[in-house]
Amino acid sequence: MPSPNSNSPVAILRRQRGLVQAEVASACGIAPSALSAIERGHRRPPDALVQRLADLLACDPRLVTDGVVSVRLPDVDIADPQSRTAS
Image 1 (cartoon, rainbow, N blue to C red):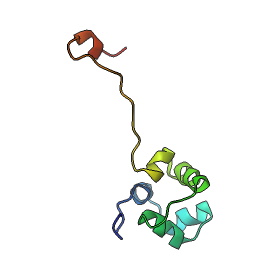
Image 2: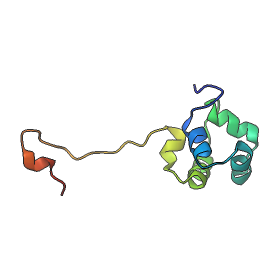
Image 3: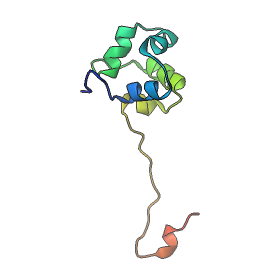
């Protein structure tokens, strides 16, 4: 669980964008205490709120819930130098 000073993805993205909890909570239609609980990992936001947070924070919704976005990289045959070139 993230610590109270919250290094959760939502808290990090919020701070990077220069927003305070009250602004984000108001824009999402929730109480600041609800946002605080989400940032601390004490509450999982419902899907509709995940999307609102992602829209507001301009990020992939998976960052809001998982903290990561996995990216499928192309398979590379390390024995074939041609497979390592950009297509």
